[in-house]
Length: 407
Ligand code: GLA
Image 1 (cartoon, rainbow, N blue to C red):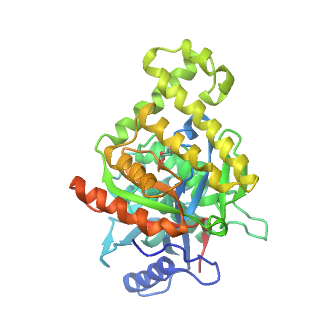
Image 2 (tube, rainbow, N blue to C red; image 1 turned 90 degrees about the vertical axis):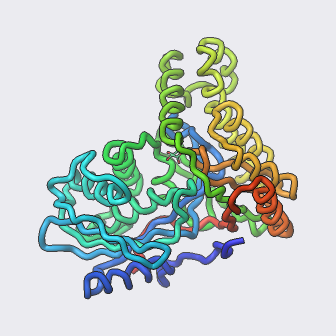
């Protein structure tokens, strides 16, 4: 198992990525950054593919973070360097912020550039030097790109004197920043994703899951202390990503939007569970499983929230299982690697398990009694070995703080 990912991120004592980013900034620029801001990756406890259907999600922030060390420039250039896990610095081609437009930049540099592009529309357009460092696993479905975008957004806003939660009254609204970051993904990077990931990174808090109504933007912090009841969330990164993940995501999204259109509704969120059968009877056969997933998944989120509010954490396990079955059989976004992780985890003692995130690879989560964590971990690793697959990466995750300023 990887390092138990439970180190708290405290504002007063910046965690490793913030130090690494500041250090790397000094080595690149020969001066100290004006500040360091960071944002976490996430897992979604339940509520998958519901965000772009105006529905409900329930993520928590990981202890893994992406940090952006930043200083203003006196011209209109954006420079970005990123510190790889191998300790090597990679520098992007500097760009003039006034010249940025969708399609201008490809690869990882599109994410920070896209943030500068969107903030330009909101009056934040000063040049900046950025150096990034982090420990959010990449390509694992744990939102490393959103962590990057959120950290860069806070850094550029911070350099402009617009700190989050500023008691002096110039507070930027985390909900609004999440929408800006969504525009980066949708319009600059070209990924038709919803609001789950950036909202999780910006609005989650330590020891809680974030119950978010995506339509209204209203959120409730629901206590989620697995350790208090002898349980753990084990994250299993399958270390696989299937090539059709982007087209598959877009197809599912368009399918659900078409279903809502046919039903004359704004979104599938508006189908009450009690009316599901009647709604399904009005849809073409190929859209029925998609709609069934979204409507039942929204209900599962509400059920999990009720159980958590009542302090009945262990009882959420069958709902996690139900979510996985629905994503596998109805939404068809699971993979052989995710299914094997989930099934093996359950057989080895997990109370419940499911894939998390968009699917087509990425990670699964399992709710496991503390005493069974090692057994489950070893069983999944052994099952992968028997299947001839690369060992998964696993770690225990606790709900950690959302994005903020470190230094
Ligand atoms: C990806 C997207 C999110 C959400 C999930 C599925 O993570 O970025 O917006 O749609 O898939 O729940």
